[in-house]
Length: 181
Image (spheres, rainbow, N blue to C red):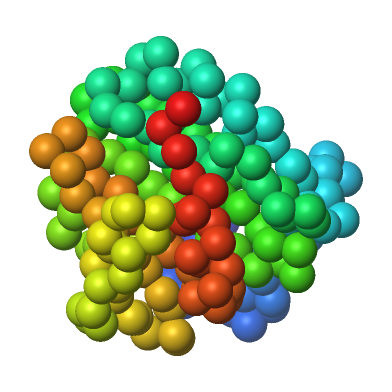
């Protein structure tokens, strides 16, 4: 016989091994969470951040190959909280605004069929008639959770205006402000 101790068998861990492993993993998760809390800056009210939609619209219009719509101005107390344009491919354009009582309305334009915009921004919406605003006829859709969506399509671009919280009157007021100038 040799003087070597018997090799430790590997098998099921003991309850103590399991508890120690869970405690170690818990400390790692807690450390990652604390690190995130210390080094993340979240605004107190992120929906109140205003953006310069007019400046972006001016720049985007130079690159867009379609009549890009943006509000000519916003009513008192309304503010833009999101704007983006991608000059490549389908040239998606977005302006999101909040009304004076923080109700959201967004306009989307893109060089795709209107059905693609509906699928992306108003999935589940059903046709509910038409409305004429400032000489443009809009197809009206009603969706889940009382979401209102209006669409318009030309050979150059599809336009969708939608809201999940604002009443139809605010949507009509916003659409009346949209211009390609």
